[in-house]
Image 1 (cartoon, rainbow, N blue to C red):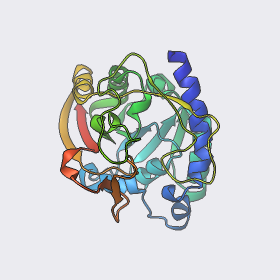
Image 2: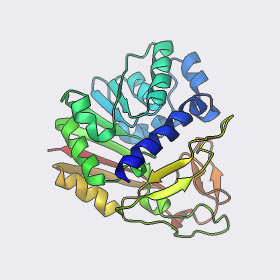
Image 3: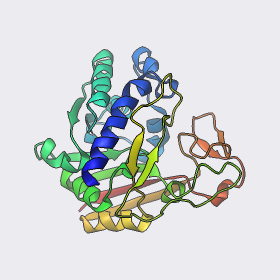
Image 4: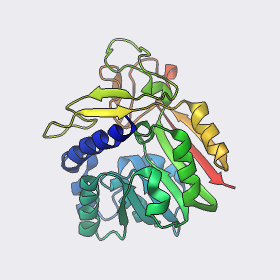
Length: 274
């Protein structure tokens, strides 16, 4: 099963990559035409991310590189890492066309320390929708700690584990339909679509995913020698995670149309290596 998740998920993300590169939500055309354009994800992060000029950073699970290049445009020296060669092909093409000095490395996230030859970074950035693809949050936290220099910082914005536990197939009410806590066995999905509108459908549809409870994520980071320095829960998320129940805001974030106070949708967690 563990071997299968890498094979199946990589095939799925290899198919997503060119579709996402052509999707309006990824705004590749604006990266090409506007030298100071930043992804919506990074623009949302800015108030908590702060000044990253001069930092050496690595973006884990970077996909097609739009957030990685955005961080580079903010003045960080960035490396992007992803296990999907098709995603990295899109990322390298975008970096070349925009003149972004970003290195992209192909590797499973758990192998990042060796893949990056033991390099140590000031910043590890993990964008939204990443942890659900990993079976063990403990191994992820150990990887983050292994990549950071002493005093280095993790910046993570992620879908809230309560959102991941909510069944999106119910369009009239909130229903808890998936595990909240990390489980040994994955949740298995088969879906020909993706989280943004695209011009095509997937044929490699099967994915394996996991949820990780808040306490499990925080404890994993503490056990890896990290100190938690910030935790903010948000009532928005950058895609229509619960179709029929959400409204899109002008900044591209989606929130519950009614009773937004009832469900956290994402969070930003920051930590430093001691």
